[in-house]
Structures are given as C-alpha cells and as structure tokens.
Length: 136
Image 1 (cartoon, rainbow, N blue to C red):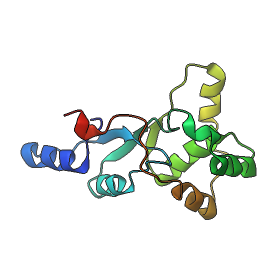
Image 2 (image 1 turned 90 degrees about the vertical axis):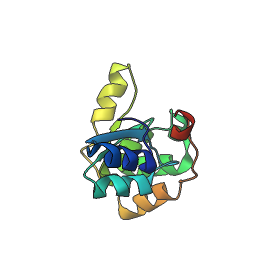
Image 3 (image 1 turned 30 degrees about the horizontal axis):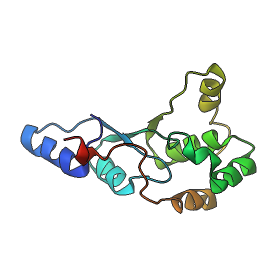
C-alpha cells in the first residue's frame, strides 16, 4: 500500500483482518516518520520511503554535506545509508545511469551514532508531497 497513516493501517487490519507487507510513505530526514516506522515494525510491515532525498532538496543541506564529506561519499549516498540504517527500504528516483550506480554504492560505509543523531536533528515535519489525509 502507499501513503497510509497509522490510522489508515489500523482500519485496514481491523476491517479485513489483513496486515499489509509494506507501506510506501514519504520519508526523508525532514520527515522520518519514526512513529509510523515503529508501528510498522510492531506489525511486521516494511516501511518503504518515496522521496527519500526530499525531492533533492536535502542534497544541499550543510549537515548532510558534512556527514557525506566525513565518509567521502555524496550527500545522496549519506541519506540513502541513513534510510537503510533505520531499517527500511527506499526508492530514490533517477533515470541517470551514473546516479543509479551511485545510489547502489552505499555498502562500503556506515553512519556513526553521531551522524544518525545529526540526521535526526533535521526533522522538521516538512513534506515535499501531499499529506495522506488530503488524498482520501
């Protein structure tokens, strides 16, 4: 499913008895959706991020840039690694072959606890897409 809030997922489970396998939601350092991720984990639902780079807007963030430089990777790679270390999956959008290869090359490093805390501090609630409640 896509863009379901916790309330939407609860209703689906209550009314059908079916627990979905995956919920694709907007998620990035500005909008990590940690509460929803915890709910998903408690119910065996995979959180999959769309707009994992904040539609590219996070690539210029100085905190992301500092973390990327410390690991000799690109800002996109640092953000992708952040998503993976949170335990979810993600769909970074690109049609550029170089960027596609870059997006896959994130296994050679790990963010430190300090890096993860710095990324967490970016949380602002900013969405780059429509809130799910505005779609129903």
